[in-house]
Image (tube, rainbow, N blue to C red):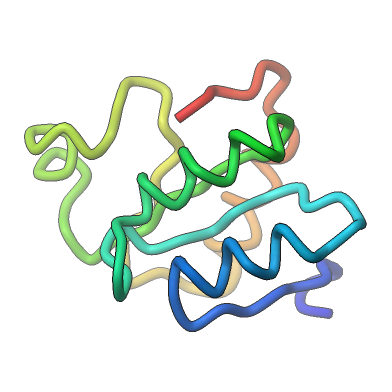
Length: 106
């Protein structure tokens, strides 16, 4: 439990998908880097939302958000957290994404 949240940790997009498939309980949020071993974070999010349609997604990257948008990685309304960030900034952004009324699909 971190900042009041139960956290599931994965070393790759493939492992994250395996965990999400096996887990019976609700997963409320996917926090993923844009660049992952084996697949991009956006691909992971798109694949996970197929079988967890209520999943909220927060992408993070060390690249600037305008650079991500220019490359088509971030659509309008995509939640994005710029690295580096503090624990407090992460906690605030997670809360904001979870509280957002109309989940934006990836």
